[in-house]
Amino acid sequence: KLEPQNTGLKVKRALALPIIPASLNDIAHARAQLLENVEQLISNGGHLIEPGGEAGITGFYLAYHNQNDVPYVKKIAEMYLKLCPSLSWQAEHCYRDRENGKYRIGFLSYHLYDHTIGKLYRGIIEHLDPNLFEITVFRTSRLSDPMADAIESAAKKVVYLQHNMDNARQAVADEKLDILYYPDVGMDVFTYFLAFARLAPVQVTSWGHPMSTGIPNIDYFISSQDLETEKGADHYTETLVRLAHPPTYYYRPAVPPTTDARLVHDLPIDKHIYLCPQTLFKIHPKFDSILGEVLRGDPDGLLVFIAGRYKSKDRLLRERFAKVFPDVIDRVVFLPRMKMSEFLQLIRVADVVLDPVYFSGGNSSAETIAMGVPIVTWPDVFLRDRVTYAFYKMMGIRELIATSEKEYVNIANRLAIDRNFHARMSQLIKERSERFFENNETVRELEQFMIAAIEGQNNGKAPVHWGESD
Image 1 (tube, rainbow, N blue to C red):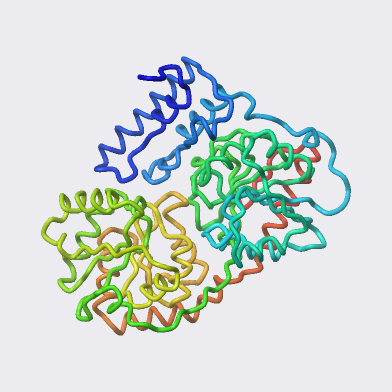
Image 2: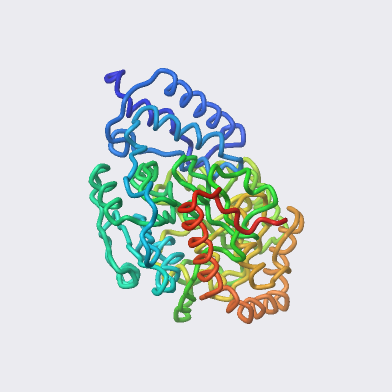
């Protein structure tokens, strides 16, 4: 009311979504309202000079609704391009024939430190063939830790980008890249808006934020065969790339010293721990009934979550649970946030880890596999709910992959109650995990794809369709 012409405020209101939706109806209403608001902004106009500072919001929470987001992310991108046409800035070198020599690749992210993105991409950056590729790392943060140091050491050049769109675009353009790799478009506001520009002849993104960007200048989305279904291409505005394995070279995490994590967190020794160690907004309303059935199937079971940054998230989720399974709500526990070593120790004492249906664990699933702790998973149709499934497929493990709600509940209860079954599954994970960790085959295939994409673009050919079945 105070600033009726403030376009940034209008955009903030248009894209606001519930973080912990109250119900499926709440999701449906929020999505319909978002689309209506975005359409109005496209029609009525307005102007943004620096979208990151004035609006500073993306469609981030759409990814957690278990729906195809392509119509929404396309409209959001269209809206931003209408309100700020300069977002589509283009670097001059993108329209010239490439120079001979090594392929110049840039990795650009805020999160190239001890973060999920750093863990997923450190190994790739370190193991790309230096005889073929010259790597530049672009960082939009200066956070420093051993992970960041390792990533920077693997690059020929590191460029710290200012949080100014004009300066950042020019700094990337000056490197005259052949391919620009955004690991996680949508996880950080500044990187999201930077991705609208054409800064390299080929621009790709991947599963750091596992949904399509909707941005016209992002050419490819790098995924894998098991992360997608036959209709996976329908979920992206980008050309979908299906590698043989998930796009990471993931270092095996160290197993922490054994401690009595049950005692530390005041968890009873005579109860079975069903741990769901995920960010709370990953818990979809349709998953609630499954959680209730898991508890009903094991009178000695405790359902354990890790609290959100804000207590309101815990409260809203608990209120939603109480409506769906009031008879067992007293066996739901929210533990305080903790350090990584404590997190891994908690995983080690879990009887079973529950992979959220409709938004799978990723980094946490890799860490759980390293601890040898069984995860029960049930894949659906989107990349974001098929990650643990893809890890298991890579390891040749079928026994912990459910094909229905009933089977998910049965596997979870059996893991907690049947100690022999639990021990067999834990041993199987330990024996097969080497197939997942530190996989050089993925890096070699990624190299082949990137070269094909660069050469194809340089020769004026159509986009490369990688990994598609005949």
